[in-house]
Image 1 (cartoon, chains in turn red, brown):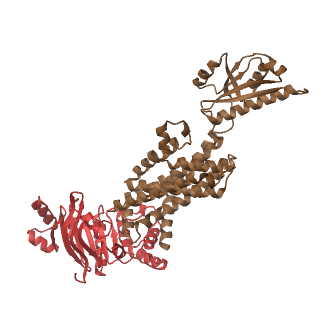
Image 2 (cartoon, chains in turn brown, blue):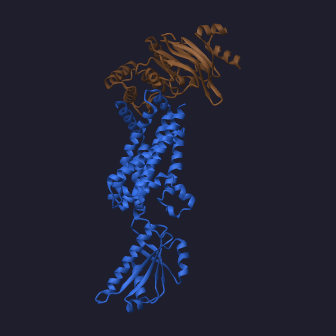
Image 3 (spheres, chains in turn red, yellow):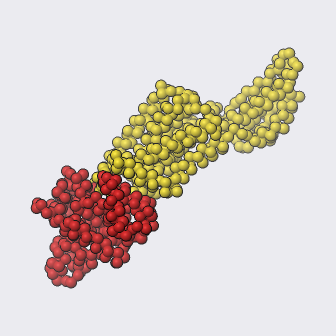
Length: 244
Length: 368
């Protein structure tokens, strides 16, 4: 493995009984890369991601995340990654500030650190008026932005985003991707799953999973050339049809 | 440690900001104790009774008059034979029958004593007890009136017999029972709901991805409920002492320790439920059906275990509440120490360890 690879996956497999959810996948993701992890519902994206973030054990194969083996050093992996799930990941009945304090706390940040970071975050997102209101009262787009910032609170080397923009309006999605780019420019590795094929265009490289296997992996540009189409959406459709 | 305190703080925010859980936590115990307390009150009013008078003489007439004029009883019938007693009770209206022996006045004069039997319907043991006490005191009053100025006093001997439930249970029985139900409800149901809530909302995943290990997550979720349940236990005990004048005979320290043990037992059951239930709804239903009903029906709180059919008696042994009720009844009502309840205590400890072990195992499986 080269030193620049933040994620290194070799022959990763997950079986539930007879059903193979993730079938022998291998790939690597470099430092600061925005890596799109695409696939239809049930293709095995979420299962694969869960193995990488250490809450599901692989049946076979190996994976290193941030330089640590997910099987043997899950605790180290957890300290170095951030995670935001497709379901909302903050507490609705806590205020923005309380959420920040809580999540900062469980990642072991000092009180001074938390204070400084939450101030910076509130400034950056322009949340002055809302810092003390319950998260549940915020519009969805805002919630997702706050959730993303909270997931970045402990300066993870890699952030895993599981369909972060589901149900969010196009403008907010655009803003969300700007936040993603900003972190990528700071050297954070982004691992993102998405349904939206236009978002796939924003990624440095994308992999497309079909029925548990990675069927395509390249830059969006190369993939479009390879399939002789002009959008990622068509790449996806063509690929899915070929497999069927 | 800081991390842990932050976690508990957050848990309290959840509880304090949710009106429904606040009510279950604090409103319910008070309402329940009050309801049970006043429903099983010592006051009786206009209780229907029947008379079986074998002698029909001056004294029995006077006694019957005294009873009829008291506001506590109204005489709703005269029967003429012992065989009619049980059918009368079975109809359900009549709560007591007064049975005067033959030659009541004659016995009183010649033998200086006469007997009257008080039969009460003890399906409601508390009322039955109260009724016989009231009748007893009316009889005593009458006896005193008769004896004024007499050298050799007459004696009217009331013989009380409980029909349907001869082993009368204590009036204060409800306090241990209600306390058991509430601790079970708060501890098991509320924890299982709060854990499944995090699963349902997806925040559990976030917690598991954090450096907190699963064990810390669960302990963090459970500790606030231990504290709240202990507060609840204290409130219930205070209410029963000061509102219902219930004496606590035994050591308060032992009572507290045993209650804490039972709380932890119930919490471990709550955790176990949350490992199985996927949604808050399922957790609530499982707690209600799987815990509350057995606690109410089979713990001996309402229905005496000794009069259950054998299979149910055997099932009652696996219900923690049964053992807890035996323990706190012993401590509160009889004033016994650990020497008398160590066996039950050991059983509770064993069950707790078993439940915790089982949930740890189940919890791990779920993470796979």
